[in-house]
Structures are given as structure tokens and as C-alpha cells.
Image (cartoon, rainbow, N blue to C red; front, top):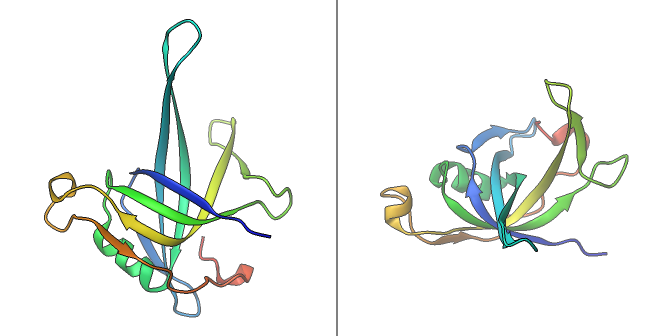
Length: 142
């Protein structure tokens, strides 16, 4: 079977990098994707989805170094389902309402935008696949 997702969105916060117990770097960040349309009554509508992204290895280190909140990125990877349901991870928020988290393991990240969009280190850059992340539960640091 094959599972691939391509997302273009903006970072919702600065990336956070950690190391797994085996010493492999992992960077997590969230991106927002939006779609706009006009409904049947002529009213403009907008929907934003939030995605949690995990990046491993050298790619994780590069993303942590160059990405900042607000930066536009293109992420290619695979969507991770909840082990029990196969769907998005379902959780309860602090206010008691239900939420769902869409999680993606990135295999490629392209930094989009111009230097003016994100400061002096911006520009268009691509970091290709740096290997598969560990699949054992004990290796995931979040």
C-alpha cells in the first residue's frame, strides 16, 4: 500500500527539536492550511486545518535551524493514523471538548517564500529525504 500527502501551509509556531533515546534528531512543528470559497448564498467562507509535522535526522536539524513561525513550507510525507482507529488522533481539550490531530511524518520539506518574507536566512531551499524515522513506539519522543 502507498500513503503520501502533500501540504502547503504556514508554520503556526517555531519548530521544537529533541533527540530520541538513540540520539536521532526529531523536529516538530505545526502548519495551517486554508481553503476559501463562496457558498450558495454568495457569502465568503474559509476553513483552516492544522497539521502536526514530525521531521527526522538531518532534515530535522535543517528545519529547526531555518524555519520560523509564519514561514510558508511545502511538506511531503505520510499521514499517521491512530494505532487503534486508523483515523486522526482523537483527544480531549482542557475545556472538555473533543479534538482531532492530523499528524504527518515528513520525508521532504521545501522552504517557500522570499527573503523578505522571513528574514535574512529565507529563500527557497529543499532538503530531500534523509531516511526513514524509527517505527518503534519507544523511539517517538512525544
